[in-house]
Length: 340
Image 1: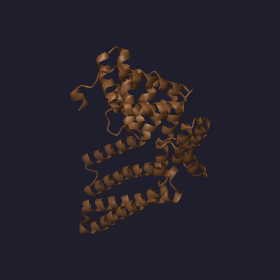
Image 2: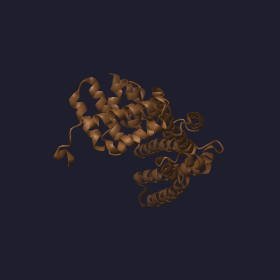
Image 3: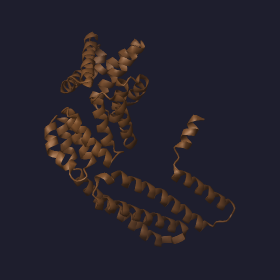
Image 4: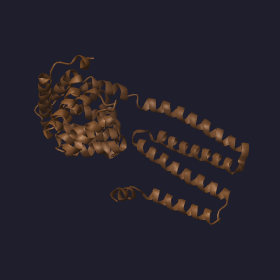
């Protein structure tokens, strides 16, 4: 019963209207008050409306980071081509014959041209992202700020760029500056995964774990991925939500796209949870998984703890890496088959 209530609550007005219209069409067909051609037209128009809704929603998602002209051309072209394609298909089904192939071929050619144009536009719009992420990965936080902050804050601001610059300021422990940038980004794109993910990172470093959970959950609603789910599980654990953290981390730790440090730290946390529950056997299994790549992961965690020393989150990392080292020191030597 609870699942049924949730299902009904998830239905918005577009879905409800679509259900009513489907019921009306079925009733007209069963009573013989609608002929075949009219039925085809209704179905094509209904499906076109449903597809157009998706196009408009996607256009709204990218609007904050695209120039107005680029955004408008993309949305209008998609809607026009979709109308052309669906109209050609409906015409063919209704008996248009070979003549219907002309608009259908125009639709295919238009979609190919639009995709090629979009590929070039997106490559130019996001040319900054690769170099910025490289600077982040290499710890060149000041270089990133100097290279990107002016672009990020120009005009109304660019939410993705603001989020990346904020991440650099977080690592520099300039949290007030990061907070201001992220509030500016939230005003532009409140639902963006990059913005909410960066906000979750800031709140995590500030040891405001409940707020970090809210921000990461918002990021996941926009873009579900293994990295965000890992950080959600980490923040749940640090917030004391042990059962939720265990479920989240168990569901993400085996995903191949999860980065190596996340796999190691997630296995450690799951081992700690099992230990606290008194399940020694399960804890040993998780610690064995942690040990496989811990020698490379522990120094990275220690470096992060040093960057954020004398903060609650930094001290937590420091304590965890010390515990990880103690666990590794107590482990027996590898068995021959385990070494292989």
